[in-house]
Amino acid sequence: VQLQAFGGGLVQAGGSLRLSCAASRRTFNMHTWGWFRQAPGKERESVAAVSRNGYNTQYADSVKGRFTISRDNAESTVALQMSSLRSGDTAVYYCASSYARRPEIVQLTPDAYQYWGQGTQVTVSS
Image 1 (cartoon, helix red, strand yellow):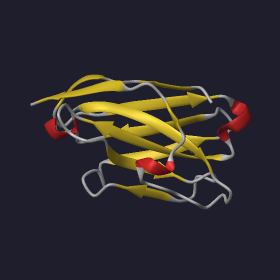
Image 2: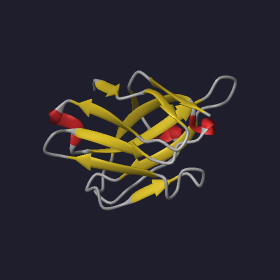
Image 3: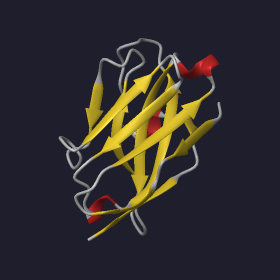
Image 4: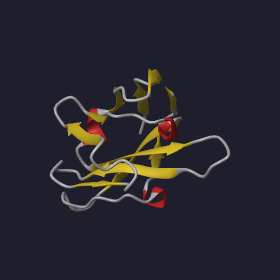
């Protein structure tokens, strides 16, 4: 499964940024998807996840109310809309996917994911 993440960049604190991740259509609809991030010197942490059917989502407490994950099954893409960005959001962001047997399953733990895209850097300047 090939994953391609894009949309990172430099943004001022309080600003917004939208990340996207594309995958092959053949597997996209059968997978649950997540976004994760890793800041320098820190462990990878969960950000958000969405179920196969797109109806169920989970968010890390640190991003609730500021980030929104969504998926477009027709386009085989998953997006992470980030608003009210803070310097603490600076990290390399990764998208990941994993086969989900049931359409409503949503998983926020990195260990649950089989496939990972390359990271995209998000830098928030204060």
